[in-house]
Amino acid sequence: MTNSKAATPAKNLIRFNIRNAKYAFPADNGEYGDFVPMGTSTKMALETDSSEKEVYGDGECIVHYINEKGKTGTLTQNNICDEYEIACGRQVMTADGLAQVKPTKNTPHIIYFETCAMDGDNEISVAKTMLYGVTSTRPAENYDQNNGEINESSFDVPLKIKGIKALASDGKVYVDAKGNNRVVWQLTKTPDMEGYDTFGDKVVIPKMLAGAEADTGTGA
Image (cartoon, rainbow, N blue to C red):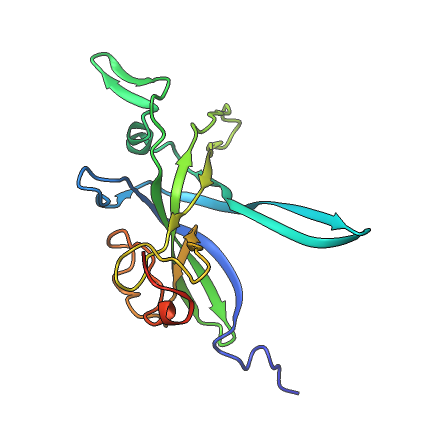
């Protein structure tokens, strides 16, 4: 008997790995600067930041509302990226060395990373992902003494991903027929999508497909 899952090449069976993490901060011209490598990573954990509300009337639930506020996450790396900490305002170079300081800013930025997937033909492909409206806090530091073997440390960077507003095809902020924006927290490209080869070279602000406004509204 043929395994139907294995016979479907387009279906991803497993996802794994993380690599090529980098970040980009807003530039003075209102756009984003170049991506800067963030060092080597071992894990990216992402969770939806959401809450639920049930409203009752006449003795029954009349509204079940899910409020998604973005995502939270943790990026685990082999070492602290000093350049990133400086960009976040948590470290400064002084005349006497690199100092950890109380930050006076918390600038939303972009984080990019790549993951792998294996399909039904046992072929590996790489997905590229950008996280939008990211803020972070200082990673904890924990160093262990060597006991016969090297005990390497890992460093967890806590993330909050609030997202950005998607654009309409004309480059303006997208608004649907009922006045809603589309807030994008995460954007992923796979090898079968147009523009995959250059995705990650610079920050991409998500745009709705051309014609979407004709069905639901116009850019505003």
